[in-house]
Amino acid sequence: MSSLLIPLGLTVAALLAAMAAYRGIRRGSARFYSLERESILRRAGFTLIAAIFLFLAAIALLIYNQQQLTTVLETPEEVTAEPGEPTLTPTVFVENVPPTFTPTPTPDPNAPQPTPTPFIRRGVIEGTGGSGAYLRDAPGTNSNTIEILDDGAIVTLVDSEEPVDANGFIWVKVRTIAGDEGWVADLYLAVSDR
Image (tube, rainbow, N blue to C red; front, side, top):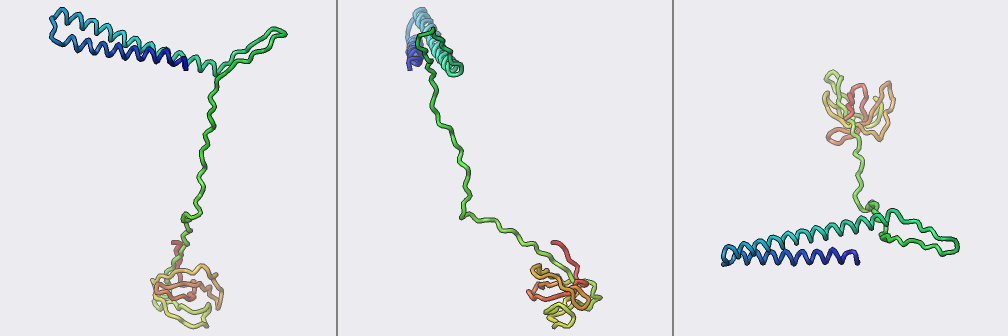
């Protein structure tokens, strides 16, 4: 605290000198004769220069005190004692600043979680020679026909059901645009991956 009193006193003296210089400049611009005005303005200029030097001295003293404090904190002096004399331990002023912890974000259990987008495979009926492919209620040529799908009809593959080998064909379960589900021979089905 005592290291701040001298710079603070110099700063107050500089402010008073600056105010005196301002008052002198104001008086010098009043109704005085030119010689008297010149003398007043000259004194105001010297007072202003003195105020600048006082400010610079206050700043220099603050910087010097800061460097001295930093030196004491970085390199403590070693104290050696004569045999039989008590050893003195140097006092080092260290600021007790608790460490700053950065909190880790905790995921909000109520926040919506992204759901995986289901992979939809589509197929197109083709290669029937214009007669269409049979959509059947079960795999095999002996099962009932739900409808006949024309060439170019788009269907969605139902991936929950595995393809079935029956009657010399591999049958794949599909869903039409109208929502009907059934089995189609994969011979007449061109599958795209999108």
